[in-house]
Image 1: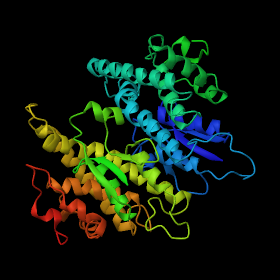
Image 2: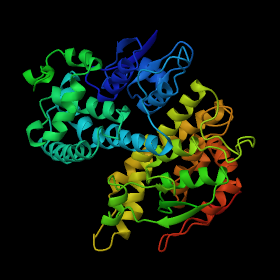
Image 3: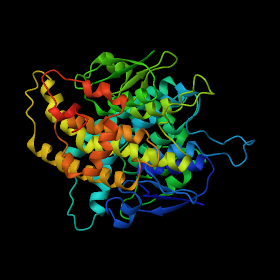
Length: 231
Length: 231
């Protein structure tokens, strides 16, 4: 069975968990605390980044980019059987758009919003002895960036059936994973972005999302609306 | 013919130029100054990031990740004819390692070193009226990071024929592109990392590298060793 080294609130880890669930592939989860930079983990992924996928047939697959493409190349067990879900659907140009949008969410949004808020509000405080106090300037900047990203999602969801085109793709999973981590922190002003909200409601109600909505971090409780499908 | 919207010193743009040259695909270059954030460019790529590939058959392919995978999926004109160069060679596990290493160079190294040095030493100054003065703390941190990345390249080049395995891959092009931009700025302490240097000498002597070694930016001259194959 596959094993995923991940952290419950890490949005990049969540995007891969969603992908595996949509593809109906079983996975064993191993927790790694990304703020600890343990030597044993750095020996597996020298970049110190989550997630890492362990497949019996291969060396560790490190990072969300390599993992998503690795899963996208997954040979069907039975070639006659249609795959339950294509991470990168469509022809070459449509696949390019899925990758552009994926990069937006896993790269730009993660860097400008989620990474900052997770560090200031969660990782810093869980890093015992660091004496971390959230920096209000960073929080303010990340929250302003979040509104910009939400208006972009609102725009995409208004123009298209799914964020990267006619079919649900890894871009939707990547975006939903980012928003789910931010939602756990009570950071998402859904009411201001109704089209983005209705896209997220569709994502949230998928069976693949259930495990993520059940996640809890000791000492950090999500708001009541986090797991509510009618938020 | 393909068109690439790029900037001459941008390492991500250079990695795609190297890929196209190794694949023996002709491309017309269009220059975009990444520090200007022109509306006309943002209309093509809302992320405002270089490079962007324009292919007559498709909408703009935005960003190095989408472009590299798009080119990797390039159908051969003549399926009987072998491709001159595979960006992601090997089987699934080997391709995953190429992507991990590519992400290291285009992501981690770019963010921690090249992006910072290019902004402080070049883009800031070319941005007329900004009154930009390089921040010595940022320069010092980026240079320390560069040594860490060079020791990693030294290690990879010592253990393997090419940076991501037995075959030259997009990871080598991505790394060489980053180092070529840093080398233009006279920032690379090659003498301290002899194995990395000998790998870069191999890359630099490839015909695909010639156009990049001929690049010049008005007002910013490279050191004499920049285009010297025997540096």
